[in-house]
View 1: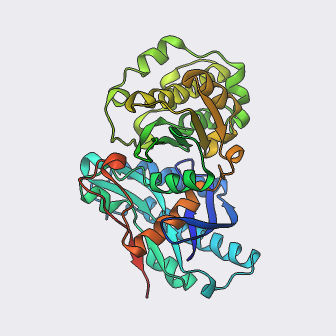
View 2 (view 1 turned 180 degrees about the vertical axis):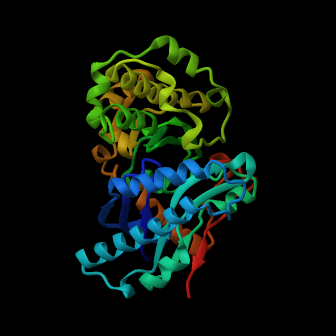
View 3 (view 1 turned 30 degrees about the vertical axis):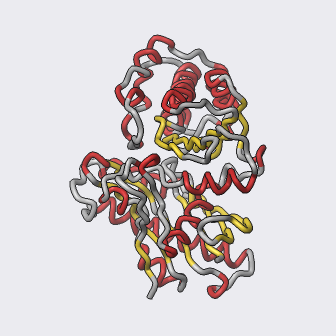
Length: 364
């Protein structure tokens, strides 16, 4: 089945679009990809929703800023798909389903609450293609963490690309998560800690730029070792998986009043060390770490990861994957699995009691 996947991550930079051909178990072909950036005004709307969403006590609540952001998310995703289909000569009948993740503004599995804003029914009505959305809630309701969702797709990719085992596939978005794939294809997956969010917020506050492009600023700075030692004893890092993290669990201002370079170095090192620490929870450490997401473009982060993991580190592109569009591809894959009633999450990936499927289908 041809499926389109959509992803708007915690970095809030834009909408990723990807087409794959899959039966929900294997991937027969990768299609084109597309991207619709958010304007700075749109990012401001999303940041306000993220801030106000922290006070929500029910996943059905829609404070004014959150309602405004949900309309924006739905419209932006519709525009992204329309532009993508026009650019690639695709019609409605060419696509079997769209996997729509939406924008996470709250993720509190301890309260059995995860909120991804975006109106799946409205998206289906505008595009005229079935949409699978709300992909995390079934796992949360069944006692899981609701994250990460992508490990089953990582395993399909590792098989297709014949990657070595044990293997670690890391997605470094706003929050970082890892999938460990063992020699027998067993899965262990969880959020490792902050990804790009802290250094992005730091750079925006200090320079007005959206990110530390290429890790250039971090490479010029000196990390605060005393602060890092204190951060790494945070209970989250010692907690056995399954575990997941909200984007707001840590704040960029933890580095204090230091130079822009030193703050970037400290926050980037914090991300690298927390990812490397994740290997403490598997029996066999990976012989290869594959880095995807925005972090794959950060040369300083990649250098630090290689140093702290003492293993080979490659970007997704270096092993034939798409660092930029892997999560969008994953949600296309998960949408088809949802249609087929196949499990999306497992006890070893989210802590759910038994494998469960998920997603809500907007079909008619």
